[in-house]
Length: 167
Image 1 (cartoon, one colour):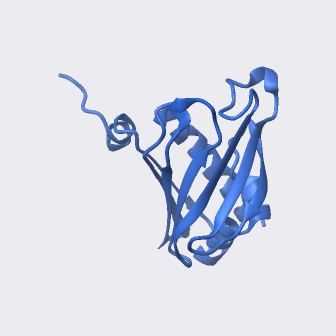
Image 2: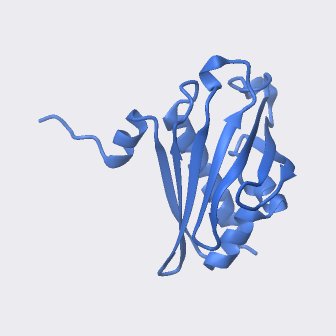
């Protein structure tokens, strides 16, 4: 009997990545961590990277720019922008305070496989014990493996939990 793929596997096949985690914090605290550039710089980067926020204008239509740098360039699989960095810019397409944030993201890269706009939707919902945070990525550029995006998203959510649950 052939094993059926789970819903996450099906999403990954379609160039979509979705990750969720329950954070033991209020929706307000979680939302604030998504809109505060200092907090974003701490938790957004996957485990093997550090984040830097260059521009941050949180409002519908507002823009942002960030760079994620590999902590050990020798361990880097190769960045999207330089050998050890992923730089990207974007805009806040929709903001519903304490509920949803939609970002449109473009990587700064000469690689044509990294071109295009990727959409990230952050959804926040009350749940027993805290806030369920869901990250949904759509239109992931073909140069990014959705399963790698999924892994990085889960690492970021784990760092967000660590930041908020120990505060």
